[in-house]
Length: 402
Image 1 (cartoon, helix red, strand yellow):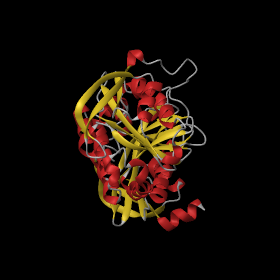
Image 2 (tube, helix red, strand yellow):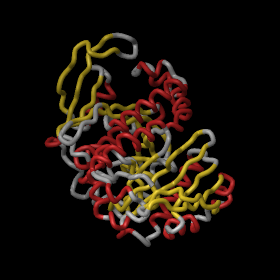
Image 3 (tube, helix red, strand yellow):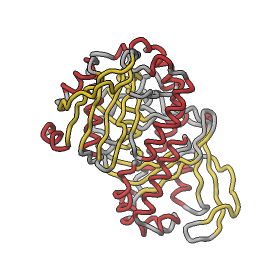
Image 4 (tube, rainbow, N blue to C red):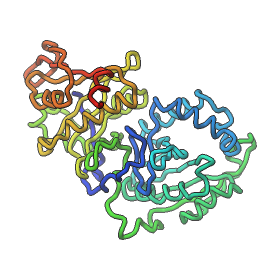
């Protein structure tokens, strides 16, 4: 399996809050869980059609505020999803669906996300039947902790057209300070050139979450595996923490993953920026860090995803101190569920060196069908090893999940 990255150094150790039950995010989502029944689901390529339907249904509600809402359709939905994924891959922000108890009730996005000490700009909308319930205010209060504690930002801002009462009210309720009015800097939904007012909140002016807030929710988009296990999407800032994790486990990983013996920080960064994140943006796979009981213990992903036919491969690695807790089996099962139940996979395989008994045991426990051995297929420490191939078809998956 190729090298994978992990969390920023500030996020590599807990404590993080246990996952809420029930999960406020839709099933199989990479979501930022906010508590209070709210979550943000990162938009992926296969969400385009659902977003197009939502934008069409909310056309009259959104068109007076957003120029893009005046051209509803699949092309606009595809543009928004693609733009959001490119931002995520470049480290400059994201587009996400705002969800309440698993239902999409609106959207939130980040512009110009900067590194520690910097700032970001937040945008949002909620569907007509969800207005007036303070959903954005509730979400933003939790996001402040994500921004200031989890990411170490120094400022969060919102930009509104003067006179937009609802957006200005959100800023006031959150304690944002009016900062500037940029004259004639914005073209609004009607095509007129108008002013744009900025409201901002500095970290030193943030009241904080309160003494009873408990652990910080995992500050990244993550796939829920179970109450104590999550697969969090990797980001550009994760290179240093992954390098440290691999460095502590070189002897453990090297026999079956020769990249672990020589991988340095530059190679880890190149993997993230040149392979893992572009693959996510193109819809060709996902790579995530494994958080178990609030601690980063490895990485896993769905790789080489193909649309025609819909197929891919699952892979993973774990630190030595996380072995024999069923983590690999549970994470792989969650990835299989995402592939078959969310992405509509027709086939997913797992490949391991013939002598890698722990990985082959995972395939056996998940009742994946052994399909044979590809000889001298897998680079290992000693040269090349024979590779055992296991797989499930969509029909076999359906039969196993009942």
